[in-house]
Length: 134
Image (cartoon, rainbow, N blue to C red; front, side, top):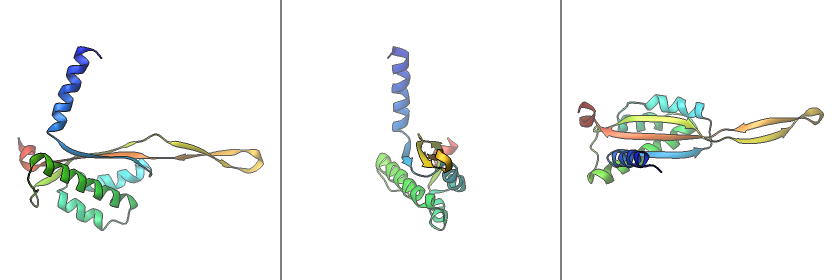
């Protein structure tokens, strides 16, 4: 690894130490289904987002709620205090596709149909409203 690349990697790692985030990797549902739920809570306060997810009938909502609670716990650990109601909001949330599992299903006349089992990765970053203004 070259010096310039190493320096930029170290700078990126230092910046990540200041940010509270959580990642959920290899979720066995399609990215399109997860994005429907992610778009519902983007930019919301954490407590309100958890309420919205609790009453959603999507399967991905339960997984996303658990991920948001994990991100809040990471923020509390980094700042060494508990989060007050209405203090934290979801500053960044996105869903990216994970590698697909490709399978074959038997089909008529000796053919095989391809089945693509999709998965996704979700990343959530929480921040305080004070940092948004600064």
